[in-house]
Every structure is written in structure tokens, then in C-alpha cells.
Image: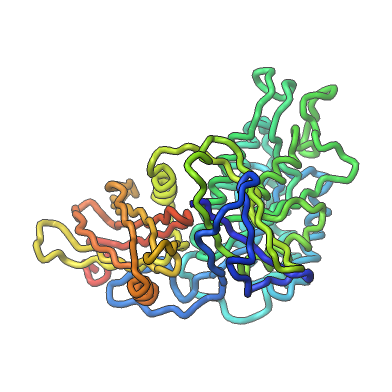
Length: 482
């Protein structure tokens, strides 16, 4: 299934929440497709059922339901526009009426992510009611920028800078996987090149970063993250700063070596992730739109014919028959011919080394003694069916989950088992029961003395959503040892 997040707004930019499936039209490379799955995704935080004895979950009453993350990109922002961008950020964030679930990070001159107002730790207690953090944005941001100015700019080759930027974006995508709902990134930047000229290449050849961009877009798509780029480069400045085609490369922090096609890079990120294409220098408009779009959206999916998987780019178009409704969704995808289970394997592998649990799919789990003994325990879990794509086909509701159980030794080294298929074929009554009680999964696991925790990971092949829950074992488990 090809899965899309669709934002529908009226002429005033307000979300439209009452669309029906038959009001949407979808084409793939100009060919009409039948929408097989359709639902409204409302990011309001629902009630949380307290955990039972020795029960663990990747969600709590304090989970943030959605996120709008602003990335102020000092690494790729020209020196001449950083001050202007900072002032615009301060002015617009101070004026926000509802800054909840809005976060601000810097991408520093040496390639680090610095949280000015970062995502809260998983399960952290909500802060007491008070003045929004954005009321203090001026001292917060100015203090952070002063600290960052003390960092000596690293003379980074442009190709390495592109890779560092993508690595930082990948880390953000992974971090945002612990947010259950929709996630948007407002990326304030001059962009990174999609191509390098021969004078900027170590080999003297043109360098094409398109494959790296496609890979990064796939990661964002898998994490449910949309990009809203805001390009702050000065008016009248060429879009190919220091691409190697001019008299010679510039030097120093004032020249960011943007390269060829930086605007194209940003537009492709927006188009491939369903974000807002670059609309100019208006930071406030991008932030407000991203916040608004994160509150609610529609999830739709369709099954392309087998012949569509041809390793080529496919253009998508989603329209609405209702007058006055504007649709925003990703405008294309790369139809890679992949081996069976590759997406599930990649998603599971990306979750194994994280220090937090992914929460796109809600999970609850317990470990209990196996009556048969022999150094084994029973892992019992309930998967939130509200977060799983169940497609109505004939008389059944079908879903495809892939699971893995991973153990960790005291040094954090993972010991994983095979991917476990869990294919669902529910009647209407069984689906309703699963929506109320969860999808039950049970597995006998071997618990050795070296294990300190185990993690259960669930991947939904239909929506690409992922969830994980970590359970301590041995002396660290509740009721054991200490």
C-alpha cells in the first residue's frame, strides 16, 4: 500500500474535518486510483488507562500527541541572514497564541543539534501551568546563539557538510518517532545542494546528492514527518552560491557553499513528505501553517498495480470535489522494487539502537514467569488497533504487522530474534473488539542472566508506523532484586 497523509483546509486556512472518502480523487502518474483506506487523524490527546501491575507502555498520560519542530539551521544559513532570521523567529514566536507542542532546535556550526526548547523526555511529567515558553524566546534564543558563536566554525568540505546535515535530519526523524501523532519540521535554512560543480568536488566531477535526498525523504515518510522549508537567503543572491562554476570558492562563515539546486532540494523535501513547498522568507506564516496542519489530517492509502514498482518516480495528485477545499499531500514517491520484508527490516533496525521507545503505535506489555520454567518467561502485549491500518476488503478487515523481540545486555548490545509476521483478518465484530481491547500478542522468550531489558518492536506494513516498548528484566524489574 502507498500511504498518504492529507491535510484539508478551507479558504481561511482552517482544517476541514468532515470530508468523506468519495470527495477525494487520487491519481498516480495520471492514472486514477481507488482509495482503499480512509480515516480522519485527530491529534487530540485521548484518555489514558492506568497501567497494571508490572505492565509497561510506550505511552503515558504525559505523551505529547503531535509536534511542530522548528530547526534553525546555522550550519547552512548564510552569515548575513542569521540575524534577520533570529529576529523574525523571536517576533513570531512571541506572538503565538497557542505554542503548545512547538519545539525549537539549532543545527550548530559544527553539526550538532542544540535544543533551545527541546522535546520533553519520554514519560516526563507535564510542567505546571504558567506563561508559555515562547514568552521567554528572546533571552532563550539570544543566549543559545551566544553560546553557539563561541563554537569555532569548522572548515567543512561541502560534500561532508551535506552528509552532516542529512545525518542531523535523520536523528530528528528518529527522535520524532516517539510522538504518536503528526509531526512537522519548519526548516529555516539556505538549503543544501542537490549537485556540486567540478570545482567544488574532490574528484573534479559533478556530484549528485539526489540518491541521498531520496533516502532521507523515505526516512521522513516512514516517520510521518513533513518538511516546511523557509529559505532565508538574501533577495538577489544567486541560488548557486559558490557552486564551483565561478572564479573560485569563497571562504569563511559568510559563505555557506550552497551549491547547485539548493531551492530544488528544499522543494523536493516538501513534495516527497507532504509539507508546504518553499513560499519565501516568511517564517511566521510557515510556523503557523505547520502548527495548524499538525492538529488534524486524513490518512488515505491505495494499492498500485504490480507493474507500478519500476524503480521510477511516480507523480501523485490528490484533489477534492468540494468547492473551496485546498488539499496538501506528498506529490510523488519512488516506486522501488524491494525485496520482501525490506521496509520492515529497515524500520526495526532503526529502532533497536534508540534510547527511547517509538510511540506511533501504542503498546502495553508484561513479562511473567513461564509455568514450564527452563529460563523462559511469557511476553504478553496488547497493540493499540486504533493505530493500525485495517483495510476493509470484502467481509474482512485486513492488516499486516511485523514484530521483533530484542534483548539487551548490560552494555546495551542488542540480541535480536527473527521478524515475526502477524497478519490480521478480522470480521466486523472482531475488529470492534480489537479497537476496544487491543490486538493481543503472546510469545515465550528466553531470559538469560546477561539480559537487563527486552524491547518489543511492532511495524505496520500498511502505514509504515512503528511502536516499541521496553521492559526491564532480572534485578532491574519491579518486584525483583531491589
